[in-house]
Image (cartoon, rainbow, N blue to C red; front, side):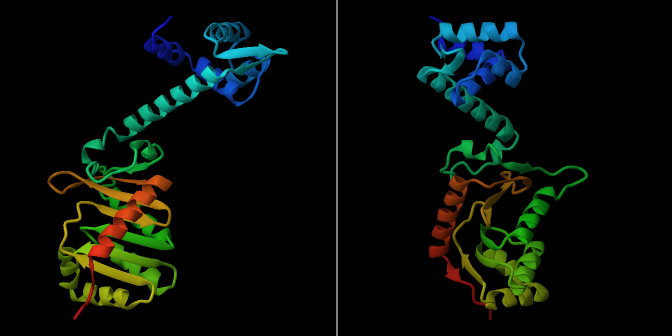
Length: 260
């Protein structure tokens, strides 16, 4: 009997094997159908099917092949391994900046995430990505140690136009910085007074800048020196549930913002 690692290698060395087994977990296929779907030659597909039968991953009946329960198990497990490795490859450049102490969801939920990093020609790319999400969202919730002028502009304009509902929890220092500028203070006051906006402040440390824009969760990723290195956003129910729960926790402990 071959070892588990040898079986993984057996599949991994041939995309045709992976695809054929996956197709056979969906429904029965003839050899010709598998050749058409995978692009493999008839002789190659014949060898693949023989190898699968030897492992009892498939059975044949009335000229069609179908996956056995163990064949289905292997196919699902291999797909899961591929997804995990794809997630690892995607997160590897930014994993050191992920707030892993605060993350309670499985990282597999970030497989489809959009990662935005600064570049020479687009040094503000992560901020621009956040602003794009704000500009398109009908419902926004933020808990953050920062709230810049650009974000305030977009939120204030959309709330005033009746196009967005907004709730935010910010550190006291962040709001003090905005209120220290007369123009931004006036804009902040207008936002606070709006029916569709509510802002609270906290002296509690907020270690991450998180936005829930409709169903998308966006995080700014900073290094230990506070320098913005990337942003990550994803439309995934498990991540949204995590962010909403964390927002609610900060919200309940924060105090309503009152501007003199």
